[in-house]
Amino acid sequence: MKIFLIVLVAAISNIGTVLCLKKAKFALVSGCPATGWLAGIALTIVTTQYLMCWADVWGASLGFVMSFIIVLVMLSAVLVNVQVPSGRLELLSPAGLPVLESIGYGLAVVGIFLVGISKNLA
Image (cartoon, rainbow, N blue to C red):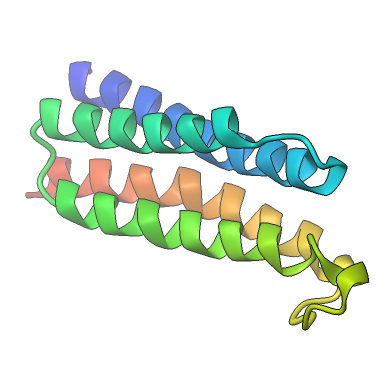
């Protein structure tokens, strides 16, 4: 039960990473500094991985890699459309951003729970 609770908190922390990315996007779009939100992204990633290692979850390194993949996907979604008016190449239409963000939320939760489940199966 203790491991399940730690994995649950880690999943919530991973959702915090995605929320910080969303806030960083709004800060960049409105021209405000996003330093605090970027620090939040780093803090939530480190917190997630610390919790997974503390729970001694087999495959915590897999969770670490998944967290960075999620963050890179979400950060690319943030940056792709920030400077569209300045002529920057747009790789993703603005209509596709909510879909990509939803995928990020889903991966954040499912990825950490899969790593947690692997501990129980091993």
